[in-house]
Length: 322
Ligand SMILES: NC(=O)c1ccc[n+]([C@@H]2O[C@H](COP(=O)([O-])OP(=O)(O)OC[C@H]3O[C@@H](n4cnc5c(N)ncnc54)[C@H](O)[C@@H]3O)[C@@H](O)[C@H]2O)c1
Image 1 (cartoon, rainbow, N blue to C red):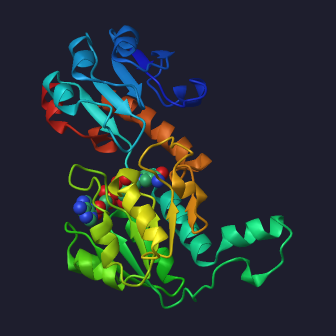
Image 2 (spheres, protein in one colour):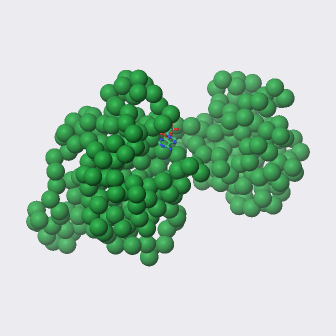
Image 3 (cartoon, protein in one colour):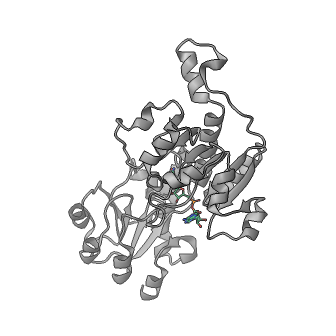
């Protein structure tokens, strides 16, 4: 069996070889274009990918591939309809970093609430002065409004409640009863934005959520909240976010994601004292990355062992054809 690693921050292939089918031939590449993928993968039985484009044209040129296992939660680099048409299974690795993103959200929340970045900078500038950062309010008793109440948001809620916060959420696909089990109440989006002292985004980027957070949404934020985004940058209209910060409609922003990544450092968010930015690292820990690679490789092994219950296949209809 020939297994091709089309791309990825894999480090050494030997990190994952132990999880791939014994005796298989394993080749590693860093394919960036369709043509490179076709050349590297045309006679592969299985492909592991991360960002490599696995497009319709790629599927048209694969001779015997049975599975593409993506080393990510998302699969926007893969044409799943084409994969299904060509009877190739597509697998991903959901939830490998939910704890990390929830922790990162709380880290941003606490840093923004306690002015950690401003104070730390002041101390390095040799100022030992309580007034070197804006005034702050006790966190206990504040209302955290979560937009999207899936896996990560539920972990954020649990952590925030241990700080004495009240958590409310908007999620059109989660029932009030399910949220109640987490001690969270579901509200309309407007109500969450009006009541929350801190607003945190945990919804996916889709054609319905691109630019969802625009000036109209910021206008609804009546409590001048801290605005946190660890979801996706393009959910927010960045010009409207900058305007809301400049006008004091929101008091601060803490962002792990930006509309363009890597960003232009001309972006005025980088010059704002009430903004904290991290470089899309919410997912990251040594533990999460190890889990991601291991599960991505095991997806291939379990597929060929026909242990379909042990991997996440996004187009299970192809299994009938295998
Ligand atoms: N910063 C990072 O490194 C990092 C890492 C992983 C995931 N993420 C982001 O976190 C997001 C959440 O991840 P998750 O694992 O909790 O996903 P999830 O699928 O478990 O939860 C997403 C929730 O959003 C809800 N939703 C969908 N459309 C919505 C809308 N229009 N308004 C409100 N809610 C809506 C869904 O019903 C679901 O409950 C991901 O979509 C991803 O963009 C970021």
